[in-house]
Image (tube, rainbow, N blue to C red; front, side):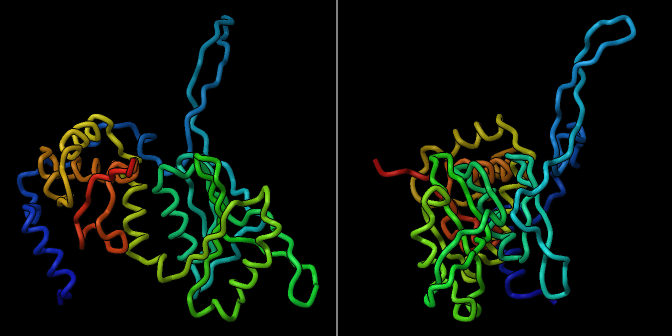
Amino acid sequence: MMTNKRVLRYMIECEHGIDNYANDEPTVFEGSLADYAPAGEFITVRFHDDDGVAHDAELWTGHTPSTGSRQPPNRTKAHARGYIVDPRTNRAIGFSSTYELTCILFLMSNIAVADIEDQPPAVTYVDREGKKRKHTYDIRASLKTGLKIVYPIKPVDQLKKTKIKEIIELTKPNLEGFADKVVLLTDRVLTRDVAWNSKSIVHAQHARDEADCERMLDIVKDIQGEFSAYKVARMFDRFAYGLNAVWCLLYDGVLELVQPHRKLIDAPYVRVRRDEE
């Protein structure tokens, strides 16, 4: 049985002419496998042949391990545990919940972020009884501006039990050199829709085509107000190429979602980001 949301999605697709893909050409695999590998990078290694002549060869190497001060425990039925590799740093980032994973994806989908660390070194603080304690924040992000932000991540129903707001206040005097800001994130912010949008942006970066991005930029740069991402994507011969370019421009900060708390597929409207002078 189709849900109301699925019916609405289908209606949106019909409105933008993407409910029927019969005229689209089949997908052609044109790149090398490495172009689509989930993690790792090529390194250049010099070697000498039997005649002593030097040659350079490209070898594929895997990602580097997490730098977390502690690693995720074994996966349980109730919680998601694992690692995801940030393609920008080629380093694994551990997560101990779907909320932490969503936070990581959200940061990975933002061009302003330079580095993401899971479980950074613990911060020492003194509790209300005068006892010295340590607290490990879940995620630390370093922005390209040099700003460092730590993110404690808790479901709303755990805020009181964990006393996380009190811990944040007690650690603030000891954050110098470690972080410039603390941002508490809950399940009300780290939703499945946010995860879906963020993951789509990250995946689009793997298949990024600069020519498509330049063409899309030329299409949208003079548009005022909100417009449909589907409509501009349909201007390409292949809808998928146009939509991938939209995702990439969202990563670049050229475009922004009109309703970032909803999946693009359900609210396919974006606008050109125009920073105030």
